[in-house]
Image 1 (spheres, rainbow, N blue to C red):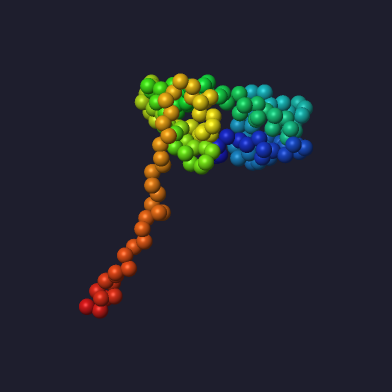
Image 2: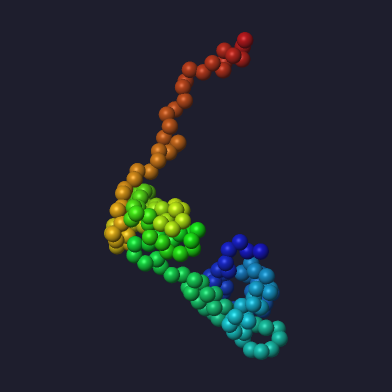
Length: 161
């Protein structure tokens, strides 16, 4: 089974597919394609085998994925635990810069107290989070920048004794 949703870009626009070909192309089961047909995916005609045009399939899958997306209103971040856009607790937000222009926004959900995350450009923070106190936090140090190990090694002396 596919671990992700079916990708509309996997379907070629000017090709016709039967149920088995379409299922193999998208990495789903044949019954999933039949459920899509019941949910509104239009076949070429009413004959057997049931054939679907690639452009029709791509439009159907794109419309399904577009209907699931909704942007968060200003002043909110998406909480994965509540599964809804929520305001940050006490209006406090941390911004961790990753590059010169963008970084990660971190806040605590006011409802369930879970940490919420979002990628954002530093220039757009005022419009994304109006009325919130944004604090710029430095990223934690990385292990890659650790000093080199000591050159005084006793391994040779220990091997001879």
